[in-house]
Image (cartoon, rainbow, N blue to C red; front, side, top):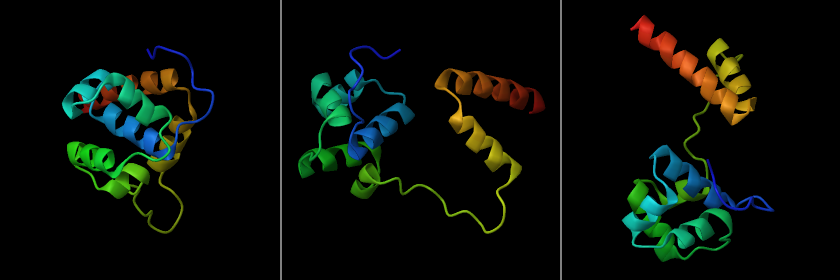
Length: 119
């Protein structure tokens, strides 16, 4: 569960992407800070407030996550959808994204259970 004060305005795109890459690797702000030779406060700043991080910091983070600098700023990983209506799975995924995080976790756990039994 996140601690601290809720942000009063949305994080910059870079901060949002940094937090997403960090979460995808299962890292805390503290462990990321240690890996990059920074403090946790610096990571918090980059995730929540930094409008213009230095090229040195951007490069260091891109190298750590194994992504391009562009990927830290833009969601370039999205694939181009084939023409035609979305698949049933795609429609379900879109509906799932609209649920609160807690309900997303419940659905994910249920799906994991079904997939384990099907294997």
